[in-house]
Length: 287
Length: 177
Ligand code: FES
Ligand code: FES
Image (tube, rainbow over all chains, first blue to last red):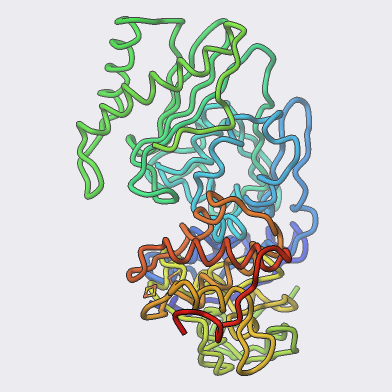
C-alpha cells in the first residue's frame, strides 16, 4: 500500500527539527532511516500529518565515547556502527546483536535511535540498551532530559517520549573489565522478528538477563550468582513473570522454554569471563 | 529549511545509473513509484511494499536499500543505481548477470533485479566474499522459484571473475545456452 499524505520537513539542524516538533505536536513524527516507520506508513497503521526528516543533520551523525559510554546520535545508521573498528572491544553485546537486526539492506538505512523510538518488544537494539543499563537522551525545544532505558520503554511500542520530544541520542555503557556479555536469539528465519532474544551481562557481583520478544517491552532481571537447579528455578520464575502469549510464530509455552534454555545458555556463556575464560561473544549462535 | 506541503508536487533531482535524473513527486511517493511511474524505469520491481521481500532493492550512494521504504523526496542529491545500470551496453550482460544466466539463478525473474543490485553493491565493497557472506546478502531477499542455491553459486563465480580469477565463460560458450 501507499502512505497517506503528509507534509515533510527536511531539517538541517537539531533546532529546526525541534521547532517543527513543537509546532506540529502529536501530528508530527520524526523520520530517520525509515526502516520501522515506512512500513507503518505504507500499511497506514500510522498517519502523521507531518514528517520531520533528521538524516541531513550533520551534528547527529557521529558516534562518540563520552564518560565510559558510547553515545549514538539519532542519525547513526546500524551499518555504520557495525563497521566501527572497536565495536566488538567496546560493546561486545551490541556487536553480537546487531547482525541479527534485519538484513544488510535494512541495516544500511535503519538507525539505532529509530529502533529505540519504535520500541518493538522483540527488537535487539532496545534489548541491548536495557541489558547494559544504558540511557535515552530526549530533547525538546526548551528542555533536555536523560532517562534510563528501563524507564523509557513503557509498553508495546509505547515509550516515555513526549510528542514534542525526539531521541537525540542513546548511550551504551562500554565493556567493563571482568564482565562477560552474551547474546542469542531464536527466530523463524535470520532477520525475522525474534521469537525470543536473550542478552546476558555477568560480573563478579551478579548475573543480569534481559529478554526480548516475550513481554510487551524488553525486560531485565538481576540474579545473584546461581547454578544448578537454583538457576533453573530462577529462570523458570522469570519466564512465567514475563507473561508470554501465543501468536502465529510460537506458543507461550515454547517462549517460556526458550527463556529457560537460551537464557541459561547466555548466562553461562557470559559467566565464563568472570572465571577468567573467554566466551564466544562476537560469534552469536545461529539457532 | 525545506518544507514541502502534503498535496503539492515537488521536484527531486538525483543521479540514476550515473546520469542526472529529475522527477516530480508528492511527499508520500515511494522511491519505487518515482522510478517506475515517474521515470519509466520499471526494472525495479515491487513485491510486498513493506520491506520484507527485497524485490525493490536499489543501491543508494553505494549501499543496497529497500526502495519501497524510501521516500522519493528523501533522495535529493543521492546516487541511485538500479538493475538498468548493470549491463555495460545494450545487448551485453554484466558479469553478475551472465553468471546468473549460466547458473539458472532465475526462473520467473521477479526477485532478480533486487538480488542483482544487492550483490552488485556488496561485491563492490567486498570483492572476496565468503559463501556465508553471500548467503547473508541473499538472505535479505525472497525468491520463491530457485531455492537460492544457484543464486549463491552465480554470485561466487561472478566475484571470482571480477577479481580476474578463473576462466570467464561468455554466455555463448555456455553448455546450457
Ligand atoms: S517491495 Fe520493497 S521489500 Fe518488498
Ligand atoms: S526467480 Fe522467481 S522469485 Fe526468484
